[in-house]
Length: 390
Image (cartoon, rainbow, N blue to C red; front, side, top):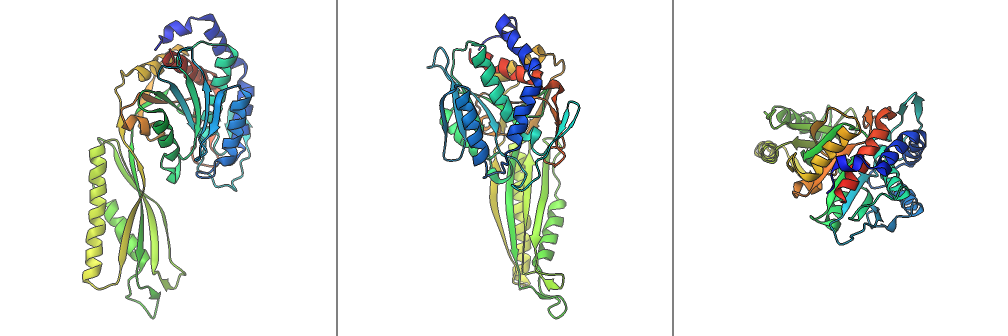
């Protein structure tokens, strides 16, 4: 791995960093072009095809798309036998296919669903690949650019799991998010997600009064979960994000279900939270069986984003820190989060997640990016990639 300071002093590299500033509007146009292609989780194919075409147009080698719709492209290094550098950004968004994707400009602030998370990140792949190739910036290791699927919602990091399985533990992973400029992630929050389904006899709200209601059972379960005591260090959380069920206002519900999200910075704390939740369901189920209410409760795991991390002094994290400072960021914030980097970090691999600019209102239709720091964010990414690639 090269020194960031050494790279920063090279005229060709400094010219490339300046070019990101000169091309700000062109870069923004490409980000919006990506954002205009709907890409809900599990429906990323159209956006993947667009990125595949762009990789080919940029002259990347070995451009391909796997069965999941992960897209790969390579800039060959001078010493291809060396461990590769993998730069990834997720294609998918949280927004349904029918979402109005119109954008609105307010100076350097641009509003639009999915702009920051993660059209800007995907656009960053294209911009850095183009700049390294255009300026003929040398590197020893192969650099792979990967636009992956399945980061959001119930995708459960399926795309990144395939990427890490493909490249293994010798690779260095740089995960790109559109927002989070000035922040680095080398510690991953663990997440377990569950679908809890309740069935009960149900009946008419008047004539059947007293029969067990699946919705009422869910209510008791939510109150029980809300009564759990969780540590603040490591930060540990629970959330019921969706509840559904019932037939009508005057029907005692015979079925209902919820989606539960459990998180923690600490693997042991997360395991304890899972056990406590399972115990709540066990006790409630036993109560209803003993009372003969005919209630059945089922809990199915639908997501497992693994926790993990590497030291702040690890090579790729140190490079990301130095690169941020080189492009003018004086304060570097280290945060713990759940991203595609969870996968390599949970295995102890060299990995870091970084952001390209400032953003806000993530996962909302009025999501926005502030492009002020976008050139610096792209510069940071390019410096880390080149330094990690030798």
